[in-house]
Image (cartoon, rainbow, N blue to C red; front, side):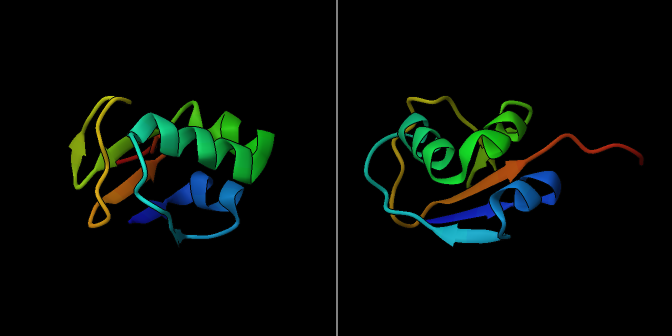
Length: 78
């Protein structure tokens, strides 16, 4: 699956996107991302909205290999 990072999340992750194995739930993926990218990323992730294929879902949502997960920090302005 594809994980896309935007704005501060991309900066904290050190990349705009990455491929990840679809083996479990959104919660599993977020835990793996926290471990992979460290404490700075984890702090940013705490403030982010997460969308799977454009929809807000819970941590128990089962991911597929075709999914796109967007990590969206708060945006200001208009």
